[in-house]
Image 1 (tube, helix red, strand yellow):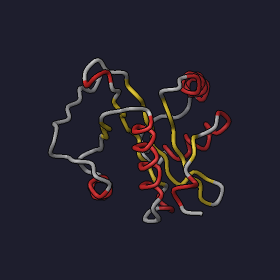
Image 2 (cartoon, one colour):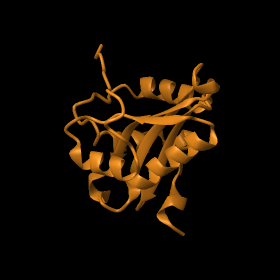
Image 3 (cartoon, one colour):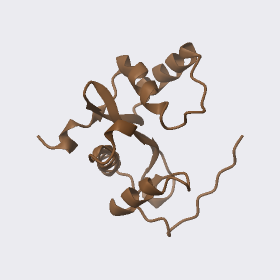
Length: 149
């Protein structure tokens, strides 16, 4: 069984494992209000257009990414896949886990009729950028802008 076949959707009862993994993505974030996260997770679980892909290693989440399928009124009504929050646990890096969850996000977008997949990454996360380009993501085709609120 290959690593790609171990990728799955995070289950409703796995919020704590996901939060533990995301502590490595943005260590400065506050994670005190578990009730707030539980309410958000309940909404996510009810929305068929939001997917959290995970892969495990030794009982913990080794990697994850978030995919949102966004309805669209251009491109013949074909949706857009939007990927965010790609993370690999520091102890599990360079084992192909991030590539596996990203491939599943792309394939899910393809199956759902998306015409493109957008992925954002912080400019300083250069190791991740190499992986994204290897998987076919093109940083030269569009500009990405954000407005922090």
